[in-house]
Image 1: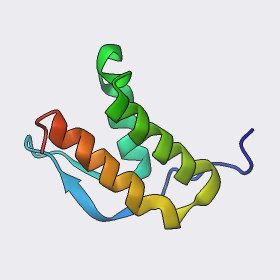
Image 2: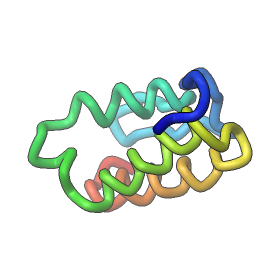
Image 3: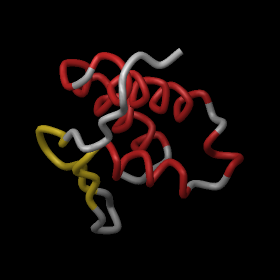
Image 4: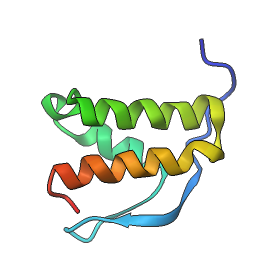
Amino acid sequence: MLSKPSSWSYQFSKPIALKDGRKIATLAEARDFVLALPSARQIAPLWQYAVALMLEVAYRSGKPALTGARMQLKYALRAEGLL
């Protein structure tokens, strides 16, 4: 069970710049990016782990865990050829 209200407004220490010029600067933007992916890609383990870390930040641990979520997001983006 989730223990506190969510906070998707956390900002990354540095925005993630994608090859196509888009930037992901907040946890909410990262969430929206993943949700916009085709379902088949969303279920890939690297995206699932990124989502799990983002949920951890938003609902439980807060800002201290943001760096780990950003790192996994970048890993997934790099694996997809988006960075």
